[in-house]
Length: 81
Image 1 (cartoon, rainbow, N blue to C red):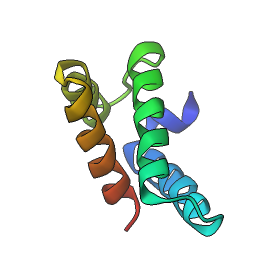
Image 2 (image 1 turned 90 degrees about the vertical axis):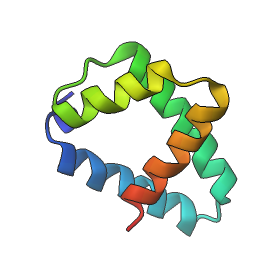
Image 3 (image 1 turned 120 degrees about the vertical axis):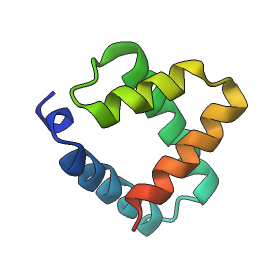
Image 4 (image 1 turned 30 degrees about the vertical axis):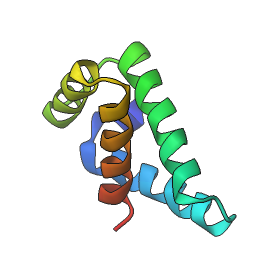
């Protein structure tokens, strides 16, 4: 996945997706739930391409369900600047 090659491009793309969700009226909870599903998918199916993604995957894999929800919320906050 070309988008996954650059951390800043990935954050920008995810930020646009969050902005779109907000524009169409998605709640913060819904956006966070979707972010958690994306995180699980990426952790299970996409090899990390840079140090940031490797760290994020390591944290995701070590986290329990509640911690993953918190991590997903934090990622949404990071990209929604």
